[in-house]
Amino acid sequence: MKSPKYKFYIDYLKLYFPGKTRKQLKKSLPLSVWRSYADRIYIAYNRNKQYYNRSYESSTLLIIRPSDKLLQMLATNEHLLGTYYISYIEIALDILTASEAAAETMLKRIAKTMTRRYVSEHKLFQASDLKYDKRDSSERPERLFSDNTYYWGSRKNALHLAVYAAYSKVYPPEQKIPSVHLEWRIRHASEIRKKTGVDELRDLLALDLKTMFFSLFHASMRFNSINHEKHGRFLLNAKHKLKIDPAKAAEASHDFCSAQGIQSFAQLRNFYKQERKRISRKIGNWSSWERRVRDMSNYYLITFADETDTPKILAFLMLNDSI
Image (cartoon, rainbow, N blue to C red; front, side):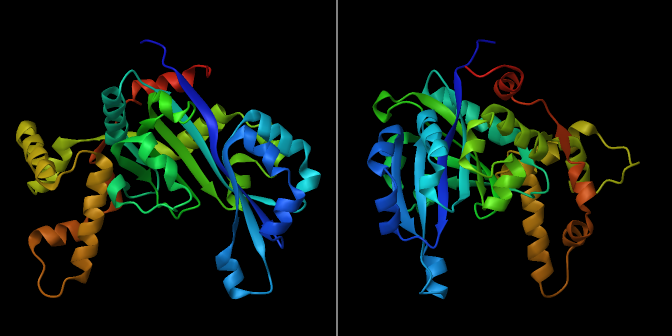
């Protein structure tokens, strides 16, 4: 296949400063110099913490797409920072494509097959339904050209993966280079330390972003497709040893998934999770279908999945050096 162009980088970084006000940070940090080496830098108060203890003030320094030069400057000037914690980081990958349509096709292929261990669903959000912090929202309209964003894991979890199609953030917005954007979002200093080994800013300089990105991938993600024959046997209430036409079983599964808008194993798994919740709340008699769904074990549900090949683009990146 033709060698793709891609880039690993830190998309977002938050530094938490306990006991320091925004005014103190502005006075002690050379923000005017640092702003030349990042897309954006600003300071925010931690209102939630201050709500419970009005006498205690703290602030967070938010850095959007810091350059390698800025990371070097931060690491060599840690004495100016005082006590701080890296409270949030986004490790991102942009896969550049020839067109917006190519990016959309790649996004759908990734979303259709990718699942996450120990997470019963992946979520599809539409840009029109999302509410962004107003201070962060300026780049969204000009960067996004797809309405779909996929999340593996809750956005409130300490670790989750987000994937969407957008103009690459590595280049200025006006260049409009289409890409598929994947990013690991990790919050809380303890979780960042556990997942990446990063405790201080100097650790970021030694961090191999590609190795770390795919280390999280190997630990958390799987690629699956729906085994329509096995799922169809369940729908037709066929026992394991009962002879049944595989084509008939597969057809039943395809029809069911089409009617429910299910395109991936992750969506199928989530469908049955929601069905179990609905059934558990139901008052009155249960139908035969509801009893079978209720009694279906997680292990049996997993048999509806077939392990499939990693999408070629991601397999290529895992085996080759970054450019």
